[in-house]
Image (tube, rainbow, N blue to C red; front, side, top):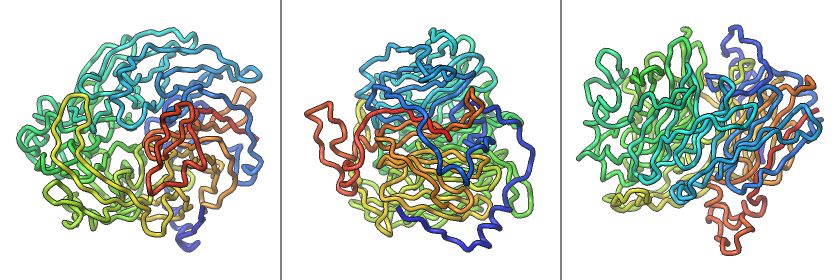
Length: 587
């Protein structure tokens, strides 16, 4: 690990002064939804743990989930109870935080179709539950959404939303707003027709379905409602696909969702276009690799913006959309901040979809810049891919992204900075024509990775979304795949693939504390107020996701699974094995 302050102190001070100034609601000490709030800030106003005392943090409790898969979610804390969902078989635990040892109050074991295991793209992960109206709501891998009574663990309803027979699975974390549950599928690597659905929170009844590609009537781009800032005309999600390729064009919704109550808009990103061979789907391929803003009541599309037109590199746009008000060029703007897999950080007007700032936050070679007039990237033609182009070399970032959409960033209302887990990987890319067979991979690509400039493979950074620049970074040996949480104590927490959970100074990036949690961290930390009135920090450890596939021999329960590690990360398996753990730390 290398700590590097990138800018002079005067620049840091100027950036900190650029943050928004407005009153905030009282922090109740709970954590009721994945992103902490509808804006997805992952910011807590709790401040008992500070830069001065975080070095005294000690483990308060730990618990084995009994599951080996990647633990990519985060716990919830509501009414003195902690809730945790495991990877497949998607078990829901409820722990009593009022009693010594935090014993189980109950455990819900859903009936999950094991056939979904073979359909899951990248490990059998689950990105966690949400709480609303006395219910814990989450998705099962096999295409069902469930609601469970938060007090008793009784199943209240179970709704089928996806079809594993067509390559759809549902590991994403739902969003609940206005009495509705919003869900989407994974399956961009299987050539699904991506969608988002709204269910009734009370009953689980399907209310509406909106597709992300196809004619306006299925995309719900309605006359007089939909207005894209950069694109004009009708049927944009149809005419930008050649030969009806939209029907199996991907654009799944497997990441994080946000909601603006004042604008009454739900925001989410869409994934890659299918297949990886771009020659098979000429055109921009809207609305893959995009952010969409929809009305929660009926799904109407209000605006959309495409980060990576005609995706050549698997640059999914499923990462979080963080909603904050910022002063841009002297004008207060309602903004959405997004760190895309394509390596650019975007500050966007969340009412209209206008791009206000777009700058690379990692090393980028596939494009030279983002043209703010058109909203389009200026692509380096030498980095374009497709079966007709053979092997394209030295594309940065790799398809793991400048940041994984899994690794949810956080935002501090005190510093005005965003805290981001990043990857420093590049790749070569070659494709072959692919034929779609339902529920089988629809990819056709070979994409070997290598470390980017400097030889390190990841960094944890602080980002100024007003100026579009990095303020500080902490370099790590391996890609950084965890989410982060920022607190009013000016402390930020994140984890690493080699199994460290760390705390750093939110203003300077100075490392303050770390603890070895036994397995690589691909989940997101939270902080909460315990029944004893003390602040605690919690994290799920348990390497998995893409890194189960890339790390080699990290599953010792299967004597046949002795795969070698990927060439670029041969050392990772020396530091971690699979195995899910919940950790709680306190002063």
